[in-house]
Image: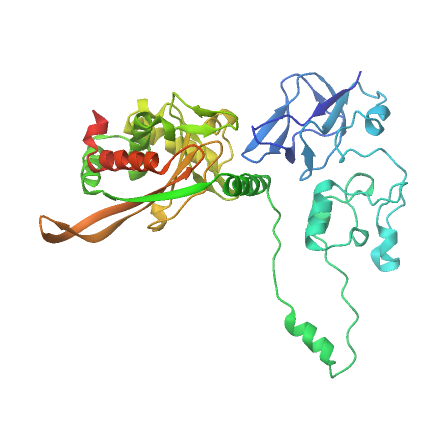
Length: 413
């Protein structure tokens, strides 16, 4: 019996995956454990392996096309096996799986009307992948004008992205009409970019967070001169360079143990207060951002936190994180200080109740013992879900955090 290879759930928020690369072609023999494809999810590019051996009888989608969770990616079985029931029946769970049909032979565009270059199924529907349809809709492209290069003339993503409309006939009048002039002057150049799986998920989750969680914000200014001195001392003896962000991560973890209400989640019927502290650190990558997690953060020293943060950030940028490395955070830190941003607010990263936004260390004049002296200050802003955390609770957390960073030797003991 032929076996349907379905799109697996590769992340906790995944709803569909995009075929980034096929490692096999139709007719190839595979065995259990072989990696047949690389799939782009909302978090990373993951390998998909098969659990049964056989021959690749059909690749149901092209590279660059999206497949819904549980949808059909490919079919394996014995060479020559009849799989027509899987191609046209209810077993094909994704709209990208199309039955074999007779189609008209392609005719050069220059020699025939546009409608004759499209591939149409028996019910009159133009053959196109869901992703190609979405891109065409976003760009305002009529699919009837696009030539399909996919199997059986099906329109795929590349066909829409590379589509160039036929040039209009030249205007013979030497004096354009007032209407033509108005249209010409109102035209604006623009570029449309494909929305990645990651960007779609970021948009969905953060919009839900912003408009569902009642955010409130509290900012505190921290004296960083002692942290600067301690960091300089540690970096003279440590093989790993410790950053100011590592100090913030460690201090936050210690403060969370003292204020467990901040280390919580709203779950609708209950507020879940976590016994462990797992701090996520926002990492900017090309398509957006990811939040890899440092587990049991409060139990780890600055050197270990620094090593893990660097390793996770590097693999996050290469899209090589495993699901367990970005799931399960209880608190999130977003640091834009390295970009010179002095102060900002961050949107809560569900299901966390709070996120800490960290600004740059500033050179400012401060008053000490009645005299104005140079100071090193850093602002941090805590965004909190008011369903879970009250203003006084978050203020107490920030006071503890401030004390730890202003006297960092205390959290190192």
